Structures are given as C-alpha cells and as structure tokens.
Length: 455
Ligand SMILES: Cc1ncc(COP(=O)(O)O)c(C=O)c1O
Image (tube, rainbow, N blue to C red; front, top):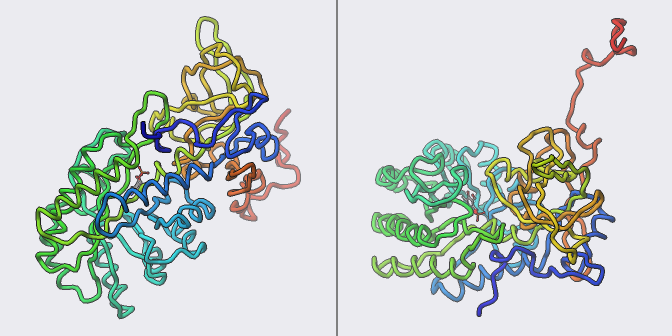
C-alpha cells in the first residue's frame, strides 16, 4: 500500500507520543513548547511541509513530460520562514498583495518565480511588481489598460498571464469557490476573442500564459481534469491567433484532511490528473506542451501546522453540552466561524488517557459563534491542559485578526528536537502601535471632567 501523502494525514508526519504520554512533533514535546513560548502557539513541522513540496515538485517531474513549476499560494500562510522553506524546495510563489510581494522581495526570491494575482491590484502594487520584474496575472480590463500604460512609461515589454473564469462548478464552500462564471475573479470567457485581438495589438504587453483557479478544499479530481481541457482550449486558440503563449497555470485547490471522515486524493494523484489532462489535450490539438504551473497553498502548509492552546474554564449544562474554553479562538482561527470548518483535536498532555466524554471547544471571544470544535470525544481534562487543534497550518495565521484586541500568537518551526521562532507573539503594547490620539481627545487629568462618574 502507498504511504499516505501529507494532505491525507490528520497529524504532522513526525508526530508521536513520548513516555510521559505527551504529544511530540518534530522531536519536540508540545507541552514543553507551550511552557517555553506560551499559548496559543502555532507549531509548524518542517518535515511535513517540505515533504508536501517534494510531492508536488517530484510528481510533476514524473507525470508531466514538459517543463513544470509548482508555486506556493502564499495566502495560505505568508511569513519569511514559511516562504524560505517552500522556495528552498524549488517552488515559486503566488502572491496577492503588496504585503505578500514585499515578503518575497525581502527574502530575495528570484522574480521570475513570483506571480502577482488579485482582482483589484493598486497602482502601487503594479508598480512594485514591475520594478521587481515578477510575473503579473491580469484579472480584468481596467488592470490590463493600467498595466499597458505603466509598461509604456517604462519603455519595456512586460510579460503577463491572463486569468480566465473557466465556468467549472465544484463542491466546496461558496466563499472559496472561484471557477464558476458568476465570480469576481478573472475575465469572462465570452471576452476571450476581444481580449486576443486587443493583446495582439499591444507593443508593451506580452501575453505569455493563461491562468484559472476553480476553488479550494476540493476532494474531487474531475473538476481539475475538466479545467485542463478548458485551459488548453484557450491556449490552443491563443497560439493559433498569434499570442506568444508559453505557460498554463491550473491554480490550486487540492483539499486536506481536517477530520477522520475527510478523504482527499493524494497529492500525486492530483498532479497525475492535471499532468495527463494538459498533455492529452495538447497532443489532441497538436500544440506544444506549455510550462505547467500549479498553485497549491492549503495542501502544502495545512497538514504541517497545529495550534496549541491552554485550557481554561469549563461549563457543564445540566442535560446539555459541556464547554471547555481555550485561550484563543476565532482571532487565531476564523475558519470555523466563517466557513463552518470542522477540526480534530487532542490533549497534548493526555495522549494515553482513555476517551471519557464529549465536549465542545469554545474560543474566548465575545461571540457565541466562537466555537472551534463542536461535540468532540476527549479524555477528562483540567484547566491548564494543552489542547492541540490539528491541520491549522493553512488560512489560520494568515487570516488571524486582533478581534477583541487579542494579540496574534507566536509561531515556531520544529525539526529534530529544535524549535525556532517564525513569528514573535504580539504583546498588548504592540496592539497600540498604530493608534493615534489627537491632542484634543486626550483625557484631562481628572477624566470624569468633574461630573462625578462612578458615584
Ligand atoms: C488564485 C488562487 N490560486 C491558488 C490558491 C490556493 O488554493 P489552495 O490553498 O486551495 O491550494 C487560491 C486560494 O483560494 C487562489 O485564489
């Protein structure tokens, strides 16, 4: 039997239990990590993250006879350390904002491996991308015309890709579905002939590729197979019309296992389906194999990450639920409240204790909906225990907020028994960093203004 790929596992690949019954990841006792770094704590297993990168890179080498470039969708988690690991594994980057792009530039990622996306890039973001020399994936006419102007001002030909809405439905949450026609992203396919004509007349824009992305956390392979046909069709038409197309970007979207019942396909199967699709459709149309770009995010970083919390209060409702509360919640993981996302968890200091009850894990924010996990089986826990929520590497840190003025957690990367900081924990003082208090709003010495509040 084939070993499960990282995206098919609930736990990071290096997870085990030590003689104290504690969860160990990357050779580090998670209870000790929390004692040292505090909680909530994002923990990234370097081996799992690098393994996922290699499954993509090596999969394309094995299944695709043409050139390929997997690029990591930085929106899943963008910080210097995560980007450094994926880039050192040979991946490029998909960035969607000036902030993500600046992180890539600071790291020194070669510009030809960086692709800027977004449905409303600002002039400043386009300028930064042009000066850096990365690839720009153009989303709409306004952007296309702005870019043509900026390229002309610089007097040089700028390579671009065009994002198309492929008209493919897939079964995932509507907020993370992007390939259906009624989407804010990309050019509608009905625009394609006009787009080709317009692009052929441009001296400063060089359309080198096409892009589409159908959505995220997708378990079915068929929509991705269908996407290759749609994209290769447009690629063949574009070539025939005279566009200098060299690349086809099939986006990301492969799902991961969050709970026992999730059964995502292996990374290698996704890569095979996409590779075979592009190859067959190119052969059928007699066009050269393009550079095949893919943009996985979740399946690279999701399974590598866990979040460790310290348990606090407990509420038992007679005849109802039992709630146990953690010291974080929707500010460090907004997915449950946003997408009704489900998670699995375990108690890091009680890995060998028997399951004893069903509880609901509540966050500490002032929202009734701030529930991380509903009705999960657990051993008996106590305040101070360390609860670890699994598969939180993607769209957690990157979607974290300061709601309720909660400082965002620290993140560490673990490997071979060492833990090192990826992101420092914010402090309460950090939260005041950007506040400005106009002089006229400063409170007088006696802040009740003599009106006797509090009497
Ligand atoms: C354009 C684009 N590419 C790639 C991704 C990454 O998707 P995933 O994290 O599901 O692999 C996304 C995320 O939604 C996206 O919008």
